[in-house]
Image 1 (cartoon, rainbow, N blue to C red):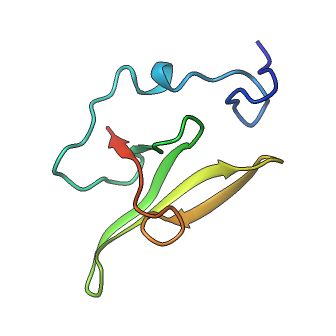
Image 2: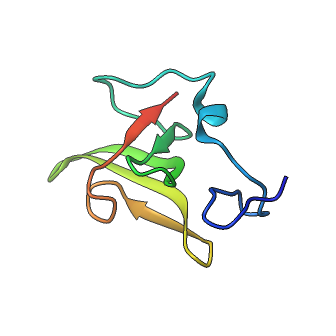
Length: 92
């Protein structure tokens, strides 16, 4: 089903419910994320995938997230701490 106005959608425009996406995964608590883990923002729309997670001498840990920004929807890869303000939860 196509998503209505203001409803979360995939890049093709179909309705997406984050609960369906993370339902079979466990939330990471106290362990760092790895590449291909899911990231879910605290707001109702943000979610993405970890594309890089590595120890960083200056910051402790560096995490890059690929997600959609919009409108209009466009793919973006952002630093979890700098551009995404360290907000959200990770799932594996």
